Each structure stands twice: as C-alpha cells, then as structure tokens.
Length: 281
Picture 1 (tube, rainbow, N blue to C red):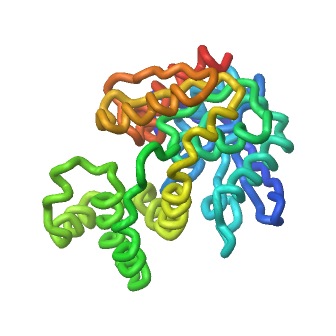
Picture 2 (tube, helix red, strand yellow):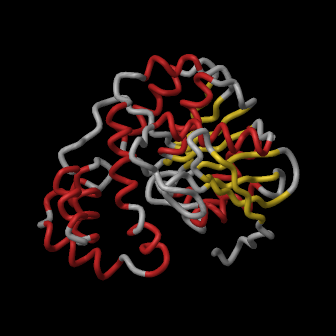
C-alpha cells in the first residue's frame, strides 16, 4: 500500500444496523478504540495507510459505509439518517469513544455527535458540512451516463460539476476529459471508484439536502479537531472556518501541502494521522 507504512494484521467485523443492513469494518492495532469513517468514492481499503499510523496508539476500526466493501447496499430509503444508524451500530459493537471522519464521513460523524453524545473526541478532515448551496446541475447528465454504462463519462460530469476540480477543467471539452480519464484512471483504485459511482450520486444528493443546517451543528458538544488541506481552494477553507466557528469546542488546523483527498493517499494519509494523533490521545 505504501513503501513506508506496514499494514498490521486486520480482523473483519460485521454489525447489523437498525434496518438490518450489514455494516462491515476492519480492525487493527491496540489501545483505545477509534472509528475511522471515510468519504465518497472510497472504501476501507483506501484508508489503511492512515489507519496503520493511528493503530500505533489505538485499536482502529475502519468502516465500510453502506454500499461498499463488506457492507450491504444503500437501499431504496437511503439518507443521512441511515448513515447515523450505521455509525451508532459500529460504536455500540466496539465501544469506541473516539472518531475520525473524512469528507462525507466527517459529516456523518458530526451529525451523529449532534444528537447522540457517543464520542469524547472527534477529528475530522474537511467534513462535508455544506455552508453554501451544493452544485446539483451535474447530477442529471451523470445519471444518464451512468445508466448507459459510461462510467468515465459520468465521472467527468462529477468532477467538473461538483465544485472540487481546478477551474481549468471546467473549460475543457467533455470528450477530451473523458479520453484523459480513460488513460489515467486504471487499476484497483479506479475499479473501487467505478463501482461506487451510483453511491456517489446518492450521497451528493444528501449533501445538497443538508444546506441550511449549519447552525444545528452547534449541538455538537464533543471537542473537535478540524483539519484542512493547505492546497484546498480558499473558498473551501473559508467554509471550514465557518464550521469551526459554529462548533462549540473546535480547533481548526491547516496541513500544508495537502488536498481534499490526502487522507486516502498512501504517502499523505499517514501525515494526516500524525496531525490527529496528539489531539486524540
């Protein structure tokens, strides 16, 4: 996975969520229990280098959110509340009082903590708490491409329309970007992403539905470390500052040189973990 990180032995666990859906998680390390919850288009596999660093001090449970890995499908009634039920089930099974969430997983952790005081400390990396309207114009053409089996074409609509891509990408023709994606996106990582494109759409629909709820996160009472990548767009960093100001007990730290996906990258995932460790210990 990474030439600098050895992945310790993994143990597979499974719990049943409130609606009966199986939720799988992978456990490694020893020490206080810590849950890691990942983002859209990612599985537990993508977080193993980060988790291996955390596992030096904790028993880490890396969750496959519903729709991926060892877990059951999202289901026809999928919503953010289902994700909260899933996290509560894993917490009940593991007894974890610590949590790390990335992107959409960070939103799930904070939404859970908002109404259920399960965690003593929470670290999140660029959590998906919308502070401004979430772009939705890409969703219809994405859905159409996905229905025809054009995964690369659908992915181009996502990266150009969801707001995370560099500005120059929005000016390039769709056919050109699709050709580039076919050349550069290959191997196991792309296969995991490709299989999660439908889940990606459902999760972004839920993100869009959360806009206007920022003030509700003032109900999170646990101390929160909010990590932000120094390479993220200035407007996004400003929004994370708004999240920091909303949470009653939060610290915002910028990790220089990193971007939104850094917790999932073999070299930078451990860097994120090292920044979170002092706060979680």
